[in-house]
Every structure is written in structure tokens, then in C-alpha cells.
Amino acid sequence: MTSWPGGSFGPDPLLALLVVILLARLILWSCLGTYIDYRLAQRRPQKPKQD
Image 1 (cartoon, rainbow, N blue to C red):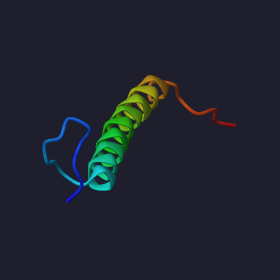
Image 2 (tube, rainbow, N blue to C red):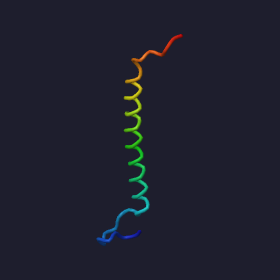
Image 3 (tube, rainbow, N blue to C red):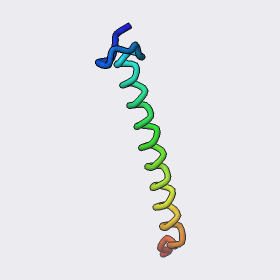
Image 4 (cartoon, rainbow, N blue to C red):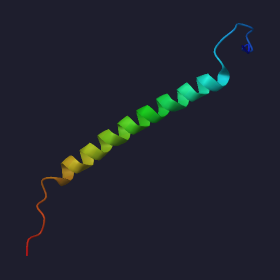
């Protein structure tokens, strides 16, 4: 195990970085999905043009 600068043992820095990246992706993906749903909900009342 590698030690943190403080001297105490902790998780592998690469593993911690991976977890942070995955959490960031999850949060961003959730926000993006909410935004897309919001945009689609705004467009829904418009009726398509009929010839």
C-alpha cells in the first residue's frame, strides 16, 4: 500500500481517482438526462405541421 503525504495508510490513489471520475460521470449523466427530459417536455406541446 502506498501512504498519503500525511503518513497514514489509505486507498490506492489511482483507485480513489477512478471512483471520483465514475461519480462525476454519474452526476453529469444524471443532470444531462434531466435536462433532455426538460427540453423534450417543452417541445411536446408544439404540434407538427400537417400538409
